[in-house]
Image (cartoon, rainbow, N blue to C red; front, side, top):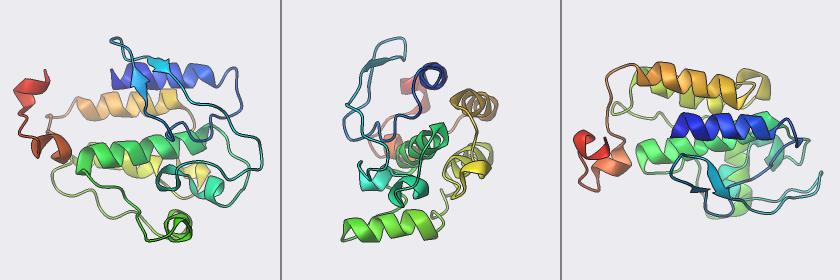
Length: 166
C-alpha cells in the first residue's frame, strides 16, 4: 500500500509543481492505497501548512518542489515508526526553526537500520540530499522492506502483533 501511494504521488508531479503541504487534512487512501481525497492548494510564496510537517525550504518561505513533499512524507513515516513527531515546540516559530536548523532525533533501535536510512534521507535538510522523486523513495522503501520486518513502535503500543498486520 505504501509504495502504491508513493507511485501515485510521483505521478502527480507530472501535472503540478508541488503539492506543498498535503498533511493539513487527513490523508485518505482507498483500499488499493491510492489517495481518495485531497486538500486545497496554496499560492507560491506563501508559508502555509502544518508546521510539524513543513520542509525547511517551505518553513523559510522559499520555493518548493516535489522534494518538499518527500520531506513531509518522511515526517509522516517518522511519526508512524516512533509514535512521535521529530520536531515539536510551544510555538509555530519554534517548530519551524527546528525544521530549518536541527537534526531529527534518532529513530531508535526498534526501526531497522535500512528503514531508518530511508526516513533520514527523506528528512534531510537540503533538498539535494533527499530522494529526488517519490518513485526513488518507493524503491528504497521496497528494498528496506526486504529485510526482516519489525512492527512500528506506534502500532506495538496499540497491542498489535506483526501477524495482525498481514
